[in-house]
Image (cartoon, rainbow, N blue to C red; front, side):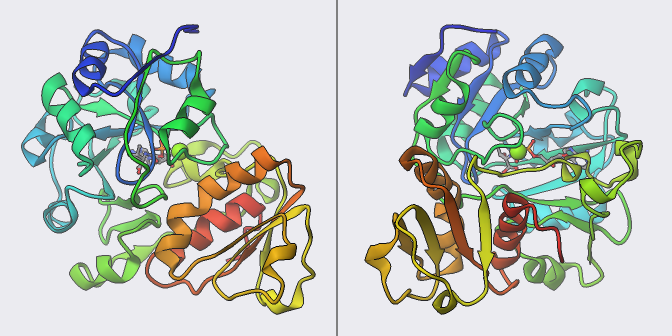
Length: 330
Ligand code: TXA
Ligand code: MG
């Protein structure tokens, strides 16, 4: 494990470290990622170690534009090309049949590879200058909320990675929409800022993948391959403090030792340990993971989060909230 982590705001320095086989946390439009060259298994294995990530959870490969796809995919199904054409660069990931260039460690042995074209200018600059696709999971330790600021990435990974590229807070705040394009019709595996409604406006028969029962309800012996996306079986996005989902904010008692995140004003906002009332689900999604970290830093003992309707980015927000609360009811 690396004990010296360089903090830099120079994308050329970050590129130099990556090109030489280092691992670097960097900003994307969704969440901060932890990047390495996709073709260097020593570098990729550093990511798994730094994050304490199970080796059966595959990584997303990031490319600068669609002309790089043939390096990592053996073909691009029509659904994937439609989605990439409309939503990339941006917060969408598609799975494609993999090329044999992609190491097994990246795909966790699956026949597909997940690909994303990020829009964040700093990440684009780094991709162009390294000139090689970069794998990048979220820059948190496994199971923790994804970092949405460079300071949060530093707090998760200092001493474990070669460098952190300082950039702005993430615009979206939740991870990309993941669509399985290796089957017909394609399926939405992980909701994100590109909503189910937007996906279906282009591909009407695209379906919503309903994850299998939660970990506690599933036999321990069930293999990862039986899930469409291995990452879905792990607990995610969880702060160290219990998260409670709330339907009606007027029915809960304020608590000076707790945080309330809501979209409808509470009668006594000042009597909460920390209180945020968001004017849109987009703002709620953008601030969610950072609010979780504030609650940890303040030493609060509970986080109450108001539910939101499951349309648009609300579906992604509810997915993250349920996982954080370990409430897998659909
Ligand atoms: O917004 C994002 O996607 C961020 C930024 C950094 O780009 N990355 C990210 O990576 O969220 P990660 O590793 O935290 O989540 C990737 C998810 C996991 O649930 C993983 O199991 C799934 O994508 N995945 C990766 N490759 C896959 C594949 N070939 N088939 C199905 N699911 C895959
Ligand atoms: Mg992640």
